[in-house]
Length: 394
Image (cartoon, rainbow, N blue to C red; front, side, top):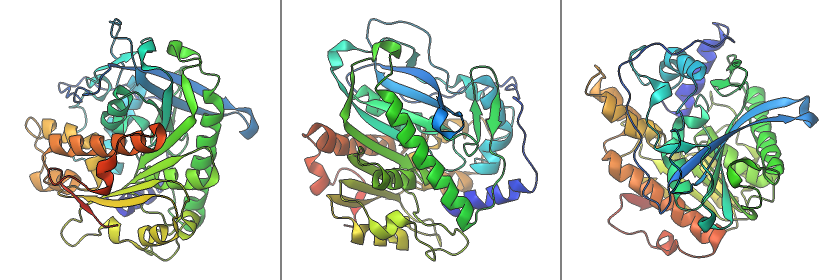
């Protein structure tokens, strides 16, 4: 789905009301897997349950991905918890994400992640630069685990955030499941959504210094912080960077930066009108036939014009909006055993070979953060290699 069709789905769901109790995942026969990471380290994952006393105890679920000790042989981290997976299967997969996957066939909770749960951090990795990850509207924080795990294997602490009440489903340690309560995609709603996401981001940053789980205490480099996200998450990365000077560099993957989805380009977000003054990478998908190419959107053009730091604007050729999520690797695995419409799959993830799409995204994200958080690497961003299917717009 494009950002606008996701908002339309949310508006339709608002008429139906919301559910708030956990629905266990049904027995399912398909368990696809994410690709193994290609970085120098295995990856661990630990989960934090945070409460913000400054905002009436607002609760968040956050996952931390990091280079793990190669000596650890513990259990695999689940892709989703059972209650969240049940809601994802029944509602999110098709109502929000438009995957066209028959309910009850995919065991979303047990997708193989190749990530170790609560593994001790690899001490050889030294202090870890931080990359915050923000998911798109209608996406759980797990929906870009492929990209997140790849960055962690390259020596980053990657922090993924579910924005409770707006994320499609958030399962807490006591079994509570908080789901998206429907939405009216108006300017006030989108404005409030973004304000909440930005506040959640700053709160999570505040709490990172006190993290002790998985041997991460004293290992987190809070002098080197980046942020990336897909769709509304990319919008969030830019908005949070404008609001919080601790964020040194940002990436927007295919995210519009405007406030009125019913009138394209009519009400640009403040960050689109002001830009940012630190390094920022824009990467968009190719336009579908007759569709919108986000790299040509008014919000990206305005953001580009007003941003004064290092910047680049790339199109990943042969891709679509969902190519920057785990749909890129999961849908091709499901298309064989399930009766998925080939045209619908192409509309979701395009025609680029999935392995090449993932490899290109990993290369550009790692190169960008290596350059601007570590101070070395990423020179190819100024002169993209022709072997990779990218086109530079700026």
